[in-house]
Structures are given as structure tokens and as C-alpha cells.
Amino acid sequence: MSHYFPKVKAAVIQLQGNLKIGDVIWIGEEVGAKGYRQKTGSLQINRIPIDEGRSGEEVGLEVLRDVGVGDKVFKLS
Image (cartoon, rainbow, N blue to C red; front, top):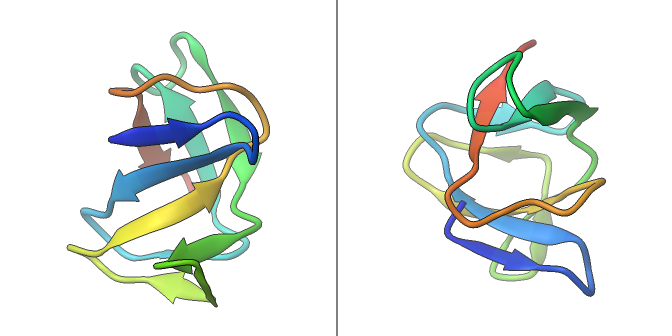
């Protein structure tokens, strides 16, 4: 994660693979370590809602809990 906006609970991530609404992700240092699991509920590019982000794009991701800059996002399903 390169940015985190706590007031709106959103993070900016650079995708290394496709990510769509409904995908299950892990946010944290590594899968199973400190972090948490959530379903992707909202994605945006330049504040425009999208259904799917593609590899290489920088997207805004709604998060359920506070996260830290440098946390990673892993797609589980």
C-alpha cells in the first residue's frame, strides 16, 4: 500500500494481478500472519468506481480496518 486515508477507510495499491469486486483478499505482512481477510467491496481509479482493476493499475480499495503504508494485499480467491 502506498497511501492510506483513515477518514474514508481507503488504501491505494499497485496491482500485480487482476482484482475484482467480490474477490477475497488478505491485507497484512503475509498471508496468515498479522493482518486480516476481507471481501473486496469497492474499487476506484481516480475516484471513478470500477468493477475490476487490471495488473499494473493503481487503484483505491475500501478497507474494513486500519492498515499501514507498506502492508501488502494478497488475493485468496
